Image 1 (spheres, rainbow, N blue to C red):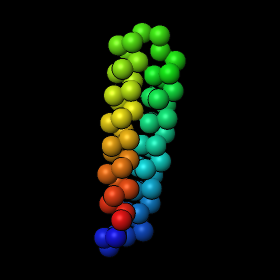
Image 2: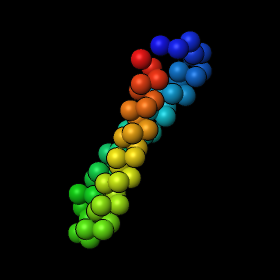
Image 3: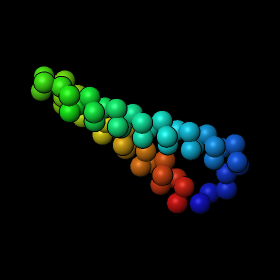
Image 4: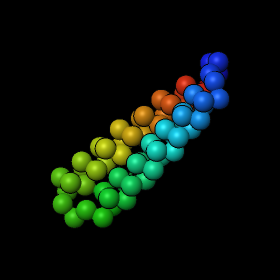
Length: 61
């Protein structure tokens, strides 16, 4: 793990929580959509936030 300050670690934790919340929200939205195009867009957005989450988690390793 890179040397990071406690302030940076706290900010990283906040961002991880935010990204995780967005993944859950957009997956929920996708599941509730009856319009296929909108459902696909919500899924794409959820996937993008999952990528962000994964990249941030990799930073901690």
